Length: 555
Image (cartoon, rainbow, N blue to C red):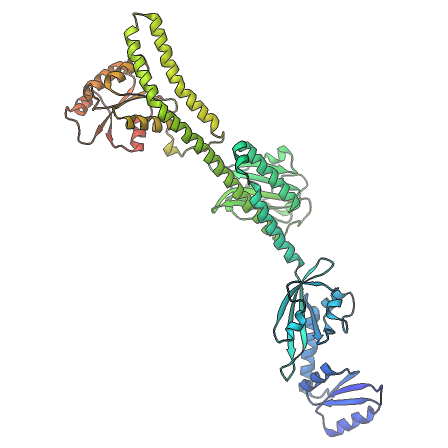
């Protein structure tokens, strides 16, 4: 009879019980099955108005309970789940899926229920591909901007033929935004200190640092939307965290004195000391927090790390409690790495520019030094003849001597102007305190005299050289030196004679004799030691030996 209710009867009860059921439901169309596998097959193929179970059948009760629990679990999932038929009609959907559809989903077209989203990739019909027997993963772009990750798995009947599909949808919009932001931060990091060669040539170190600071403020505002930030650099010599830039803070707030210590220097000092990020959800309840900007209720501080070394800190603050989460930590750390890389790049550029200027000045000095020394020696020799005999000529010769020495000072001054102001200090072992020490070097070997200018000039010494003993003695009579280095094999006098004459001309100067190992036929060193010589350098000598021989001169 058309229109009769259809009832699925799941029971393996005794014949008498089934007869009573037929009698009581004689107006209904009954479909009897003996187990759940048959019941599910009928449920997939047909529509029923009711299901009748035998409550006394233990296996039926257990299986029914499992199915009910499974549906509850699926309903509770945050991901959307739907069973889709061959005609793409939704046979069943959990609550999450129906929320996405803004209402009941059963019977609706799968794609239309999701708002007819755009499908990524060349395969525009992933459901049909899944019916071929394989799981398909696609991304659906909804019109509201949400991105859904879709997994479609075919379900097969007993004949191993797919007759419906399970569709699992996950909202990955936040993940995509997360990845896009990280990519934007990486791109921003490359632009932080990027300069074209012509820009680099034109900009000073201060201008490059200022450009970096402007870029940091711009990217933190445009990408991360942070309104209160502070960047400090760690001075390893003092342990102080020197302010580099701040935004949203007064100069007094940003200028607090902090050092890299785990306690007593706020969260910033703690982070610099331990090298780990610190998330402060409530500043009022955090004992490490020291107020920076007024009214801030939460903060996030990350270390700036380059090659496993903390070089500074990056701090952001908010007037809201709990304004930052683990995603913010990841973003801030990614940006912090980019900032550290940019700062290191600028440091290298500064060092490179300083080295280039230094090498240029040294090259010029090396080429000019010996000819100027020849002028000095010649002028000194002539001056010695006119001193006390012709005052006018003596004054002219003294002017020549002064001008020749001025040439060297001008070269050094130009070099200092070319080099960046923030020149990196040399390590203590390479920078003896010899600034301004006047040194006379007497050696017949041009290479030795050039090396003396290069090495001693780098230490800040004022160097003059002579080719033989008589030139050195003449210059010693007419000028004042803090130290005199003389080879014992000068062409015109023995080492001992040169030592005596130089000591007589400059009794206050430190005298250092130089010799090759095993060469001293006239026993100059023995005689000089008997007369008070204290310092000897055996060629080839090391830099540290030369430094030790001059240590304390001019003090």
